[in-house]
Amino acid sequence: MSRRKVKNQSKRYDGREPKELRPIRIESGVLPNADGSAYIEMGRNKIVVGVFGPREMHPKRLAMPNTATLRCRYHMAPFSVDPRRSPAPSRRDNEISMVMRYALEPAIFLERYPRSAIDVYAEILEADGGTRTASINAATVALVDAGIPMRDLVSSCAAGKIDDKIILDLGDYEDKEGQADVPVAYMPKLGKVTLLQMDGVLPPDEFEQCVSLAIEGCNQIYQVQLEALKKKYGVVAEEVKE
Amino acid sequence: MSALFENRALVVPGDVLYEGKIKTGDNTYRIQGKVSATRVGLVEYGKGMVSVIALEAGFNPLVGDLVVGEVIDIELGQWVVDIDAPSSAILNVPDAIDAPFRTDIAMPEILDIGETIMAKIVDMDRSRTPILSILGRGLGKVEEGFIIRLTPSKIPRLIGKKGSMVNMIIKETGCNIVIGQNGRILIQGKTREQEMNVVRVIEKIEREAHISGLTNRVQEYLKQLKEESK
Image 1 (cartoon, each protein chain N blue to C red):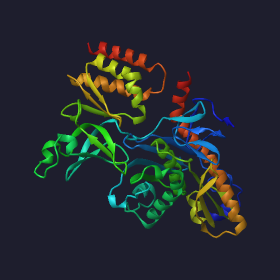
Image 2: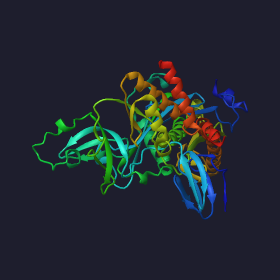
Image 3: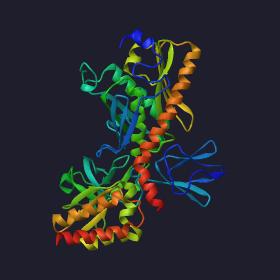
């Protein structure tokens, strides 16, 4: 679809309203060999996250004497994008791994497990824009599934600007062709932002609009994360009551 | 100043359980005068205390726990044992052979890498690394059997009140069962069939751990398995 055609429509290129999320689905406990795991579909993004730990840190010299270390690995499968992508970790992969770590660290009681490591592996099976936010959403559910003590869940969503319009949850096209992209990670119950990035240029008032819109999106995603956990554990809770 | 959930309702990390003064029990923390959950589980409002029964939790080693572990490394005077805890456990030579360490002891001949042991946590060192001992009745190297894993948070259900559940399974199947607090369970039976029956029962307990009347259902299931094998 050409850019001009998009400009003349009130709806977005994939038929969404400006403040509408893509269809999102999360499932927890999908990997039997991991301590905790989750699978997320956010639009056409498909991501599996596995969590291991807290476990002994290897190599040992990296262990911190007073706290656990959170290690994240964001990796895009060669077949996740067209054309095929090299499976070797790229500069972008390393950066997003770090960003995920920064977004999740404040939510975890790392100080309760000195000298150990918690590993989070996010594998992107299919990418369609906003993989870092989707990875954070799934990683949170996987961490809860692993029984790691947390202060709050972390929900993550992006807002941005395309054709001078502020929009929520950017897809691949909007990400690449848009004027700005603001990914936000947010702890809904504590009301704290754990990640705030911006790609592109925005005047201050529009930046604030984007952040508050993204937080609104995070609150919607929080409900989906709750549903995913309730789907797995709600059965138990109901049977206990009987 | 009130409970914000029903007793035994499902809560997730971050859920505010109570506002005001109250003691914080297991799997909860206090923030800005409120008490929140840290793990997914069932909230319990006790007398002057709020806690969460975790549905998902790793193994937290405590002194006195019986564990089933695997030797992963041999160092000078000690074995390193993987017990599925945040850090590996240490088994010193005097805790394994009841004699002081001498450099002419061939450690791999006593315990080699890859071997499984039943051990007791006797101490924590200053950095909270568990110290094991295999001196004692029923402890030591595991020569035969079948090991399966169960989430550590479900181990109390498998043991039952004063061991009622596990004793019933031992009686009905004729297998010897050793339950490590770390979630590794050792099953020793006369035949592979006997062992597989225990595995099936434990899988059932894993699925239905928090449903009331578990002991009765397991008893029926054991009878059913017995008839099938006849």
